[in-house]
Length: 193
Image (cartoon, rainbow, N blue to C red; front, side, top):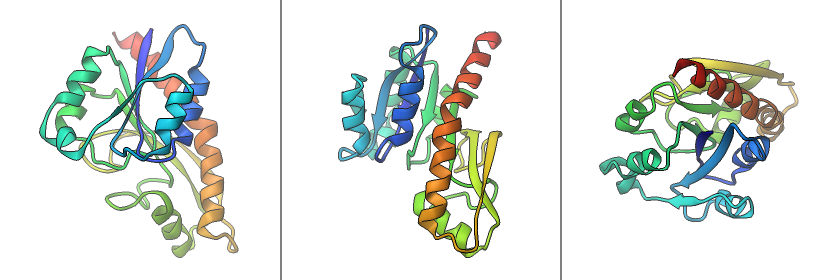
């Protein structure tokens, strides 16, 4: 059984879709959800799904290895970032090399980097008059949005689209593709061992 931990900072809609996707599987399970936001909607979603939640603060995340130790003690094989807003510390990246993925709500390398998340990304897409946007699923390294790209999917951006319109189209792609791509990457892990 491969064990996945999900890091999320917000409402947790992607986290819930991932949990639903793996629910009932005998080979992969979401065993833990972690958040830096004690008010995050993902906490309620996790409770509803009966998945343990760990809430941590900035100091614990960056100045100690408690989270890395917790993940290793829980037998976590793979980490998924789903709307997680903090830069991953280098020791955690090294602890899970090519075993940590993130989803970005645009077509990297465009509209990535520090401060480019959520609505800010969709506003940038509209402002740039991009004809397409989409999602990028990538491995995590020590820099925002710079890890090797695993998968991209696109959607058209109309001249009349607002940032909210783009966000809605991108979220459809996130929910459609992220769980499946995670499944494919985790399946490859088994063959590497």
